[in-house]
Image (cartoon, rainbow, N blue to C red; front, side, top):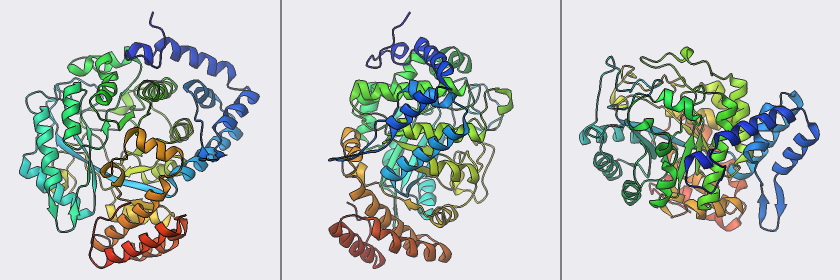
Length: 481
């Protein structure tokens, strides 16, 4: 039997099945222990120190106790704490991005994904470099600056060389005032050498969803293909770190297995990265299983309600307070609005989950990976966020200034990142308003920028930001702190 060890580089030891079962048993035994629950919540409270506000976070066991507790008053305390932590470290900023699907050729047999190799009904497509260019221009014309590229796993159609060529193409395209300034990558687990090549290509975050941490379920859900290897897949972020990629993103697909098991495994994975590499995940994504071609989510019996989903998001924010949280257009406007308040700091806008979807006037559905619930334009999403008091941010400065990995986390933990994030958000929002926004959105945005200057604490930084916003109005682009 494997022994639990968060510093180990073996999947069975840092995501230890017996430890998860012990944790869930402990949570059930203490879910009504209000003295313990109060102590856990108190531990997670932001604390003022000489170096700024600190948050201790929660262990996987502490978070599991809170998840098991069904007391309404405790739930209110969890949500209130998550909201305050989110506000303290991320303010009102919401980072915007879009996925770009390069190819849906795939050799894996994942039973929950329409791209699985046995699906003969879905049209297969792979973008040429000219098609990549057209997709990128379409995204730039919306106002996007940050992409997450996606591709199925196929050694012939989607080798790493193809991915690297696409990244080079994406970064090379300058159209009007448009430019993609950060490319995040969500592709299959690979080797240290390949991760080194991705790093050299200038990627931002390497993102890989675990799908499920329950190994027995994982093997059943991935019956064929390279992804069937649970250990190789689960250890991928370690190899990415070893290859020099210090910003990695975690995620599980909620609905595949029991949500309490998944949250525990997800937090153990975050703890492992911190223990083994000195820096936790840059982002955590929270997708839920959705309908797609050849996939009926009702066949999976582990779906979770919106209320449980919101509680999970709040607990992730409390447990891993400095980590970015991502939610996609899988979720509806109403659900996204709810979880943004509780911890989400990055959202996609105007997403199309089909290969070549952005150049089509109507959203194609025959090659979609999943149904898109929020189908608003980027302009509509930006205005919606601003009307709720949030600042849509197209900032990519930290990645381009080398503030990644432990350097980013150090600045985030002592609060110094705020001196960069707030002005960068306002400047990139101003770019969007000048180049892409509707008249109505411009009106809302200009008022928001004027109001948000007050939240730049440094007089010097505030003055520089105002000056640069004026220069953006005069036609100059790409300022950053």
